[in-house]
Figure 1: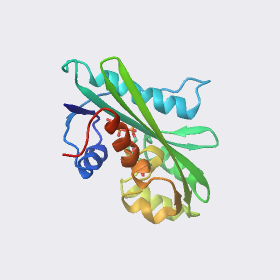
Figure 2: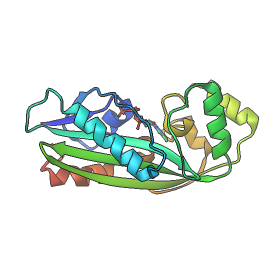
Figure 3: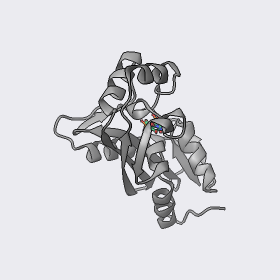
Length: 188
Ligand SMILES: Cc1cn([C@H]2C[C@H](O)[C@@H](COP(=O)(O)OP(=O)(O)OP(=O)(O)O)O2)c(=O)[nH]c1=O
């Protein structure tokens, strides 16, 4: 049986989209980057912690899938904005620049643990203060790494994407399907 250790509705929706049967379990792990930790290592570690936390109380042969997504600009990691001021500051930083989104997916079964990394490059249009204020007022930035959602109104802020749309959204489905195949999990 496959379990998705995530409270993210996006991740559940994307896993459903590819026809994989699963049950969702809620996890909540601290997301704190160590000073010397590279962005990819950090994202991977957090995603792996989610899978390990998700294993608690499940049968020994359960397969647990988890993911983490962060936005990276100039080696700085942008998680979810704390409030409107934080969202505004992040969007100002992203405006007119290209950043990376990093998504790492882990599958864990007993002592076996494997991952896939998906890095995309996203170029934002130059945004006016009014554009940013209107977007923050829409509420969409909250709960989203980097204060935007590519699957929502945020799409109007993005000039160019190089990589994986679903990876930016939170669960890179190509990489996820490839990872799950290695554990014998296929669409039903
Ligand atoms: C960049 C971007 C992020 N996001 C979301 C995906 C993730 O839900 C969130 C990043 O936070 P995460 O910490 O990766 O995930 P989460 O806390 O929402 O869910 P869980 O840990 O329970 O799996 O940002 C979008 O929905 N669209 C986007 O374009």
